[in-house]
Length: 151
Image (cartoon, rainbow, N blue to C red; front, top):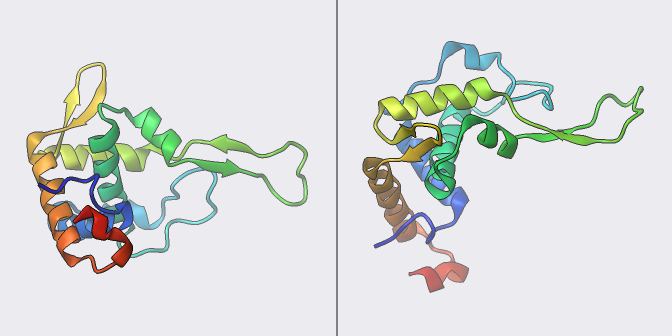
């Protein structure tokens, strides 16, 4: 049986994002929202919402139970300031939490993840099955010689 650990993350996220397009919907405000303080503009990808949802689902499956704070730290970036008045050095900053929270709520409504009281979110049996089916399809479609050891 193929699991999420047997396929490359980028290929799995693309496959899961395609499957999530039918199950969740992007809110209207996403066209104007930045992903965090470290960004200047909103995401330019058309399917950003579904890619981030697939990435979140994979992270919850691998690291769960996990909360919104820890996920926002993982999606954060380097805050550099402007070029003209750079006084302090760069430091890390977390990403915006509304996008993560909203996506987790949508994935929870679909039954892919669940809330563990006091621990955060973890993946359900249906979510594990959903990811494993996507991973098996990805492995079947892979035609990369360096990945033959996974077959």
